[in-house]
Image (cartoon, rainbow, N blue to C red):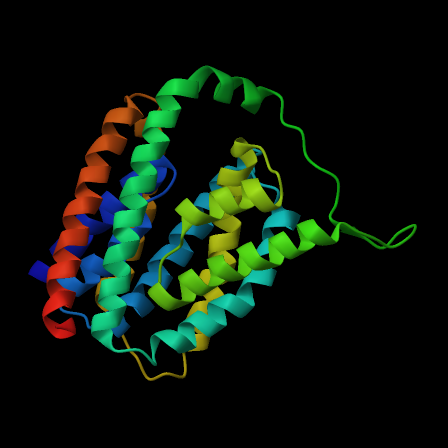
Length: 276
């Protein structure tokens, strides 16, 4: 009963972050499942369910708001499937201590990127708002009609970035929204408004692919905890979206960055004794 209550609280926190800040919360799913007694393999597998379902719910909401380029998201996610499958198989081949250490390093990176985003947001808020009002989408990378045309350097950029995104999702069981959004900005030249919404489509596709790749590995998480965490995260994301319209999200983001740092330290404490 206590474990389920903790899962409800943690799921609400994850959802609030996703809804209010547009990302970051899903990275807490693995540490939460670890704290609830799951092994690293179970936690990263269960996290894929939380991440995938929550991202799907967010993608539907963003689609209704007109902030999703569905075809491009599916295309990028499809390219990323190879990396997701490879990452899922690789995660079962490395020691759990290495998996935890890699996850701790990832959380430190996320905290750093979130801090950088806060600083840049304060400096360029006006320019960012103007950019949202004037979205300009680029030309297709590959076309087959009326004649074949390929912007091959950009196609290679899409292949590399999508594979990296998939690999991260499959290996560590995270959505990687902090990586997917910059990847879409870099590889597809999407305006931020569309990159944020479209990233949810990519995360849904890669999470599903990684989960399918792990299906035969014999790793079975505690589905009661996973389902509870997922449902409360989805509900929390709706509440978070409403909260964002009434609250200074800069303060929320700063508080969440501190939380990510604290959790990164917790995961490092779990990993280091087994590494030395």
